[in-house]
Image (tube, rainbow, N blue to C red; front, side, top):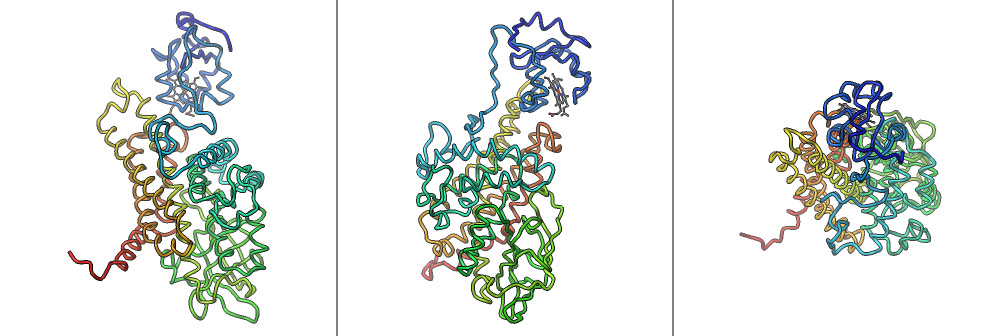
Length: 513
Ligand code: HEM
């Protein structure tokens, strides 16, 4: 490993059974590996490769992580005398130095009016925890479709990650947040935004939702509208990761049009009898509780339904990973205690709508972050990929695409931070009345921008963006899954329209051109 060689010495090992190459000043003995090489042996004996410095050609074909895998790391037999390695992976938790890979507030030498030192300290700890503990499992689950492990859920609940993802509020009181980095009363929407953005950085869109998003959207109606008994039982179970939850509103009959729900609840003494189906229910396959929209005599009502007799779930195969636990849920004459009614009977629309702002804002946060990862991937790739004897970025058409990508992600980020700042300064009710429109417009803007960036990134990466492994794997995942952000929590066109309709409602009577 510590052996040192000259370029001339390496050059002699250039044939079958005796093959060395250099990548970034390190010497690799590929003599026995050549026949096992996934790209085939022949390419390794090409001129400029066998016995030579193959750094550029290597990084034109492989991600750095290939060299870091233990089975390949051990192919390294030494290094070139007097040469230093230049290409180093980012340490877990560290910031990227690639321009625009981080939002401005995390870029060295830049400033932000929104974030303080506590946010910075929090971000550092969250990124380290996520990259060390969550990312390896996220990548595995995205691939094998398995649900998040209880072990990881326990680690997250120890740091109170699940509780923090529900935002600032009294549910944080008395909890130690992220090993005490932030006091519960100081936790604000920027802290929460940091959690959302950090978890969306792995290129594992299905896992982002599998990471108990059902609880994030299903639990608030319990503490805003549930009875004290229900709150005392359900909230601790869910925040500690002992029980799982899903929000069950959408049906094959009604999506954004929640007024059209067909699942019915009929009173029978102290019980509701619930019959109907729900579709696309995130985390539904493993949920213990369902915060469910039902049709009652006088309109919509929201009930907490526990998994039990009459409740069945089956996985729905979507374009993203089954790790999200997306389910078709059937309620067959399920008896639900009347005490499980959330809010007033017939007032379900308000319960559902008041929940939406936070959910949509959360989707925006993860979406912008995932988009930024793609910008970083494209900047790196067009810098390292050599075509026609030059880096890909030497092509004006590629630079034009990169320019548009950067503009989009920066515009999304800045609007998102501005809305988050409003949230920090508004009561819950003020948020409902003043921010539903802007958040709807923002969400549409972000999801549209995301899909444009997915298209551009696919052109930049070419065929590599079409395979689930290898160089363009993050682009492939993003291209396949960015459409989810345009649908989940409200279809983008409906939300954009909501924003305009709300603005029109607020037009002053005296306004004329
Ligand atoms: C330490 C040396 C090397 C190791 C450990 C290695 C390993 C791998 C692995 C694991 C893959 C599968 C794809 C992936 O996971 O990204 C691959 C593919 C490939 N490798 Fe290598 N490789 C090495 C050197 C080289 C060199 C010097 C060349 C130069 C021509 C090369 C050419 C290729 C090609 C053409 C593919 C197929 C790429 C694709 O399907 O897009 N490899 N290699």
